[in-house]
Image (cartoon, rainbow, N blue to C red; front, side, top):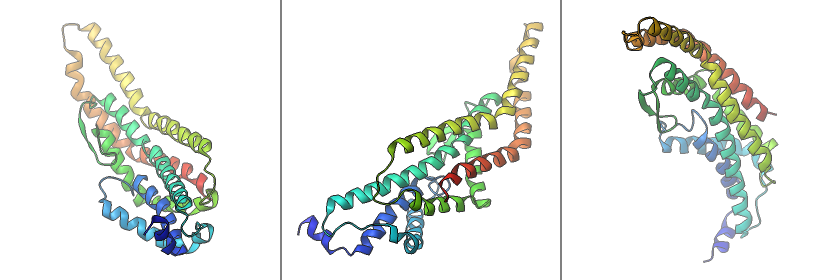
Length: 257
């Protein structure tokens, strides 16, 4: 039996569900919090299937099922929905990467840039401060119900990006570039207190080194740098998370109707 004959046996509602699952699954595999590597793949798959069944009654009317046996049209529909889901998930992931940028800058200022740990949110090695902020950010997304905004953006995306319609790759590329730029900008601003601290601390250490060239000033001040940096991190973690969540919600709100 040919592929076209097999496709002709599929009812239209199965095709529609497959298209919805393609968008939902692609987003769930790449979005922050939901798509973190600490969450088993089977759990993410179960979440995607559950969301597909929950969204189907409200969005299925906007999905135009291809003609029976038209494998090319089905491939275009599934491929387009997958690309849209990847775009939504990677857009949110790019904003969340601001915490990794801030963590790298903070670790550099504290002298912990060589203290590398496994970052479970990105499945790579990273600075210990960046890993801490990334895990805390994912936790706060769930604790503050910001994940509801991700789900709302997914649901409303069917009104902004119609299934089977033409994908505006230029607009998508511009949005991704804007998200990456915003992540770097936000990351540096979140680490601004540590940048100021580093400038003042190392300037003072340089002056002391000029006054006492025989002493190993930077070696002696390393524990003080670490202690003051940890105290500053303790005092600013709440502000960092508040600023991050505010920007995270603002960026995702543009996908809401």
